[in-house]
Structures are given as C-alpha cells and as structure tokens.
Image (cartoon, rainbow, N blue to C red; front, side, top):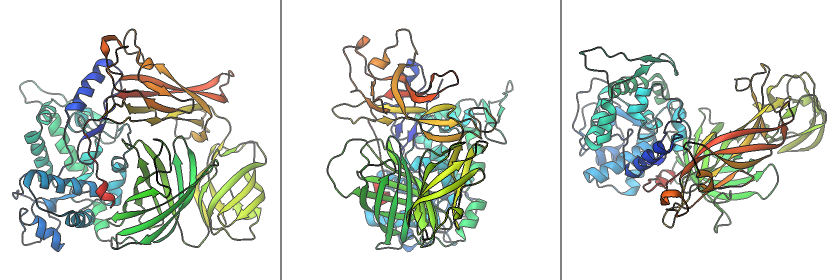
Length: 604
C-alpha cells in the first residue's frame, strides 16, 4: 500500500497529502487533513527566548536592525550571539515563518520592510549552504513527490506523519535546539506527543535504505520513535557542518546581471527555450527580469517581465507576469508565476521550478546557463538520435555561435557524425546527423567548438517501455468555495540501455511518446466505482477533478473522492509482440485543502 506522504507548505500546514490504496485509509487521512492546522517540524522559535545551556559555538548576529528588533527578547551575549537565533540556520522560508510565529504568538511588533530585511540577512548569515539546501529544494519548489529519502520507519512516524520530511531537514540546529523543538511540538500539538512516544521499530543504517531493527528487551523502557528522530537529526542536520564552514567563508554577493539562456520543460506543453535578461534592482540582492520563451514544438511564444530576490547569494525567489494580462485557463503557460531557483557556485548556471496554480500544480522545470558573449549551448531539440538512421535533423540552441562553422566543428560523440549544417544562426544551428547502427544507447555530450552541453543528447535503438509521469499523483475536488487541483500526465519512452534490462541505471529516457490517456478503476473494495465520479481525463493526459459533493448518485450520498489508475496507451510504440506499449500511474482524488498558507512575500 502506498503510504501517506503529506506535503507541507512553508508555514506549516499540510497542503498536499497522498493516500494509500484502501478507502478506509483515504478517509482517515482526509479527515486528518481537515483537522491538521500547523504541526510544524521546522518552525524554529518557541514562545520563549530564554537562554538554554548551549555547549556549541553560536553564530553571532551582526546586523544592527536584526539585533534591535530581535534582541529585546532574544538575550545577547558578549560574543554577539542572540539566544536561540544564533543556534539555528534555515531557508528564507524558514526565517519568514519564524518571524510570523513571533508576531502571532508573542506579539512582536515589526513592519513588513523590517521583516524583509531581517529575513534577507538571516537567510545569508544564518542560512543553509548550497549543498545543504539542494536536497530539500523540492519543498520550496512546491513539488509533490514521493519522499524516498526517509531513512527509517521510526523517522517516518516521528517526522513525516504530519508534514514533509524536507521540513525538518530544511533546518540546522544545535543539539539543544533539536531537543527544544521536540518539546515545543509536544506543548502545542497533542498528536506530536503520541507520535514521539510510539515504540521505535528500526533505526537508520549506514546508508539510505539500510535499517537496523529495534529489539526491545523485557523490563526495559522501549526506545521511542522520538528518540530515534532526535538522534538522527542531531547527526544529519547539525548547526555546524563542513559545507557550512566552507560556504560561510565566501562572499555572498550575487552578480547575476546579464543574459541567461532558459531551457524548460512544461508537462503537457513540451520543451521550451528562450532568454532571461537580468538587470540590477534597488538593492544588491534585488533584480529585474525580462523573459522570452518559445515552444520548440511550434506555437505562440511568451514574453513577460518580473523581479527576483537572491538570498545568501544563490537562492532565487522571483515573480514574472504575462505581458498580455487577462484571464487564463488553469494550465495556460502565459500567466503570472513564481520562480524558485538555485544558482551554482560559479554563477554560470541555475536550476529550479517556475510554478502557478491554486495548489502550485503547474510549472516549468527550468535550467539556466549564462550567456557571456562566448559560444554557449543551452538546449537541443527533443527526441534524441536513433541508432542506424541517417539524415536525422537536430536543432542546437544557444548563443554567440560563430560564423563559418563546418560540420567538423560539431562533435556529438562516438558513433554519430554531422553530415552537414542545414542552417546556422547565432542562436540556433540545424544539422543533419547520421548514426551508426552499433552506436551504444546512452546520453552524449553536444560540442560546438569550445562550447559543451554535457549529457544532453539521448541516443537510442528502440522504445522498449514507457512510463507515465507523475507515477503517483494527487488532485483535489473543487466546489463553490474551493478551487480544483488539477494534474497533467505524460508518457515517456525508454530504451533499456546496454544491459538490456528495464528500470536500471543505464536506461535512456528517449522523449515523450504520443499516447492516449484514460482512467481505470483501482480496485480497493468490491463494487468500486471511483472511476465514474472522481473526474475526467483528456486523451492528452489533462485531468480535471469533479466537484466535491455530496453526490446523490453515489451510494451513501458520498463525496466524489477516490483513487484510480491513469493509463497511457502508446499510439505507435509497440512491444515485441506488436501490441501498443502501455503504462499506469496512481492518482488519488481527494478533498480540497481547507486551510493553506503561502509566502509570496519571499519573492518580493
């Protein structure tokens, strides 16, 4: 059975919850989602700023405004530390939620401008190193994913029963602060005390996926899930780390002005390419943007302008609005969106997600490469190169491609040869490619003179199987007072790779496969009828949930919730028996999220 995997927003509420296959589990968890308010494993500051017996070195607070606004409650010491604050590190969202909590619970008086200043300071001086932020970036990028990074069931019980596991891992704390966090949860949330007290079943092993069973001896107080979680978090997320020590020595200035190439994938809308021109704003960490994107499959492009804030020199939080304005279909790409990205240490690339929607369910997966005036490759056309075929057309997108290029200056790796250059422009090359019949399936680098785009070109022999993405998904019923939460599904084709085995590391993701989508009953009970009530899916894979109900046409006048299979049937790709390739994804359609938080101010 698929376990429940709630996704928590930045202020602590469960906003996306995945449910297992059985109806009883779904109902129980749906009720829990209604009742949950703010079980926050990541919130930093309790109602008390009383100093604790710290044995670890704190991180001094040097900003005058932060010391002025926070120092009235958080006691300063001779080393420049402020109690509690100097023994915590987290993301911009984490510090923002901490300030909100101070206002709500303790009556802290602070203006929005002062709060923004403090968040920007603390996110840099008391933030996460880039290596610490990247593994949990999916939380702030608003991705709904299966958290396979939970190292034991005891940790799932203690930390991921109410919110994403990424929430506590978005913080770094001293050993004393991790203990205070648990006590804070127990004080505010009765369910936290129950979860912590459950006997532990296992402990994390040396590597992810390895666990050590807990054997409780007669007459000895059992080891609890809370104790396992406390020991793990103290070790996995300490206040001081090698990454933090190294990063804190570096300047945190963001020199991002200039031209950037955008390579983006938008589920249901294909591959996109374009540019983002960045100019400086009113402060060193603020920037203005102009974005131009066009779909590689043809169609209307998008032009928009926006702004962004960079925290700690690498964490981008931005906004962009469509130049045309107006109203939009839920999945229309030309509408206002939010941007979350992480820039590389050398300032030459970035990756993240640009999203929109009532549940942030729509979004581009984006990669940026700096265009500095020298030749640079940003993307190649989708679909890859098929082994043994000649005259295959490949588009190479980039910037500052020189004139006078010859086929010999374009290198696609062993087994591929550029027969001729069909056309050449400074930002796009179109070439004809021949592939040897015995070329190995894999990802090839694309080189144009000195410019290289690593692993960008799939080379394949046949589409051996397909996958539906997302493989597990959630949608939310709508109603008069609550919006729908949609979902877009796609079918991707895969070559099994040199080892000839599916679902192994050498498989090659070829590209999107043209497929028809349909719904199939996920049989959890006798006479299951969810497929008839949860909603509809188009042939192109766009799922629209039903209204919430109650529905007099269902037995028991039930709501329209349920779980179903989403089935993709390839139109042309076939197996060795000549039958169309098929694949399934699991979809839960559940109740609206009745209580949600968001932090748009982080992007301003």
